[in-house]
Amino acid sequence: DAGVIQSPRHEVTEMGQEVTLRCKPISGHNSLFWYRQTMMRGLELLIYFNNNVPIDDSGMPEDRFSAKMPNASFSTLKIQPSEPRDSAVYFCASSLVSANTGELFFGEGSRLTVL
Amino acid sequence: GDSVTQMEGPVTLSEEAFLTINCTYTATGYPSLFWYVQYPGEGLQLLLKATKADDKGSNKGFEATYRKETTSFHLEKGSVQVSDSAVYFCALKGGGATNKLIFGTGTLLAVQP
Image 1 (cartoon, rainbow over the protein chains, first blue to last red):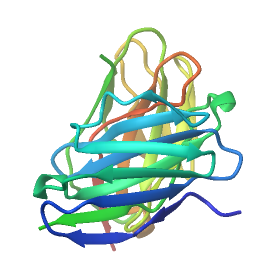
Image 2 (cartoon, each protein chain N blue to C red):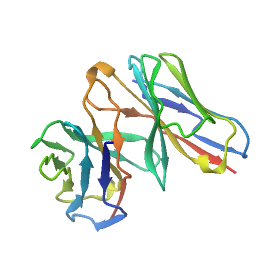
Image 3 (cartoon, each protein chain N blue to C red):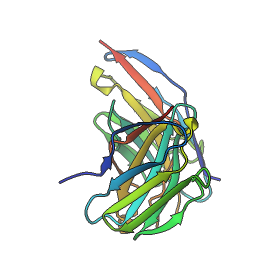
Image 4 (tube, rainbow over the protein chains, first blue to last red):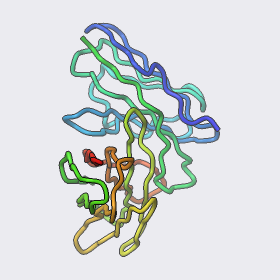
């Protein structure tokens, strides 16, 4: 079975440009999480959705960040405009809400570099 | 709020050495506790978990015991291998119907032959 699929795997862009990261969760999973990983701050939860509805976006750094989940098989994380401090690895993870086990299935991440 | 604190790395060991990575937590109620592992270039994957006090999670030779009295969940392995080199994350899940996890900052383990 396919796992969580993220794209692009690597993105290099210039400050001020718009960045869109994409995620396809595991089929049948109804909970989706966006995390950001940096050396300084570790792994931070940005936002998560249950059944395509945003539940907690308190980790979204500022208005430059936005996330959508238009359907059960696709989510985007957008940064506009991007800044060098946004450079990080962004992970998407999915799970089954009903399982309530705490097991998240992670994608391989999107490494973003903002120059 | 809930939080997880784990020892800073890197931890460098020789093959077959004993491993301990410390993890303590702060949480209201009775959280579930987890260890996730991240191999180079990959996403995180669940290594083991414990859902209540005194539970011991184990997998691939790794173990961790949920200690409520010391609010700890230390990861141990009796004999590490080069293939165990990775970043290890301690995490907690609060109560309620959510799989939201709070992660520690991660500990890099490097095992030398």
